Length: 396
Ligand code: ADP
Image 1: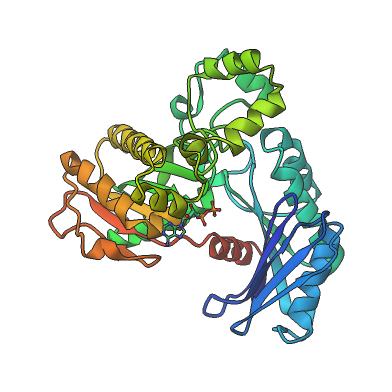
Image 2: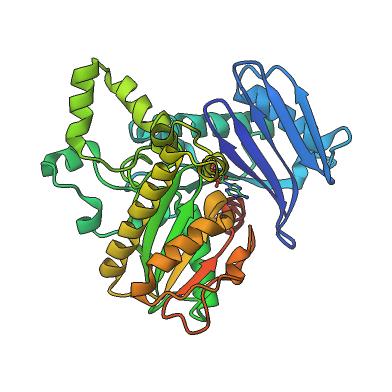
């Protein structure tokens, strides 16, 4: 059985064709600059095929995906009918979806209805679903796998803020959390590594550190708290996002600089974080390189992030009532051994003992704490596409 996984953004569409027999990726690629000019990259059979091609909308992008899968040198299937189902990464599922669902008209409407909570992502997901339907017809089963779903187990005390309760009721203002598919995947794997595959009796903190970053506290296999909020802006310093701050700063700056809500939003989402503080880059490799050359603001951004992560880990250890394991994942978590070592050193008070040799690992699963560490620390590469494919298979 082959499943096509789709991750649609406003001007991009990523795809991955996964053969569930052995769970291997047969082909993957990305349509970029949709609606602008169009760049298409297809990877299959050990080769990369890249071309500039007009893609005025997501339906046109899907046509390119279809062509690449079924024709030419990167062809991996004879006919589209070999694709059994399509799984979509959906972002915001509100309080309604605590798990993945098979897509029907009601689900599409719900994704639309939650667009105010994820204005960049949810409309793009709908475009992806519509384009998939146009390309594959209405008969192919499609599933939606929500970023927010895994966090739906959070209790009220964790997901509400101290605002008038009516705003929660009226607009759904609350913490939803994101990267749920990743936290779910790596925490499930961590439970296996702890020898407790059902999660019972485990207290885990998962650190998804990428361009966007979030941390989750997971007890008995269920999320009890997470750093991202109503939107992915909350939490700690990310590539270009500021993370949590005194909310008055927002109104203060809007007033001083004469900024509209959209302009303020753009500053907090695109010009802040590691980029905003360092003035160097949002990319961690650039930050690390600048630090090595003595750039003080790059070092400040790095130190601020480490400090904030440590505060979350300490807070979550308290919320969990103790800690069994910490997991690092995503681009930075899987690769940045210097940051991992620094964090582990500073967590000695919890009984963390780093295995510096094992910590040299990049992008591979490993236990990076010593055998006598009171808290076990793992690097577990995330695989959101595989979760989407597995959920889709289960649903059909
Ligand atoms: P996202 O999926 O949120 O766009 P990723 O999970 O791919 O992001 O993470 C991107 C981040 O990971 C970038 O800041 C990048 O610098 C960092 N990264 C990727 N590879 C490495 C590496 N080998 N060493 C250090 N950082 C890395």
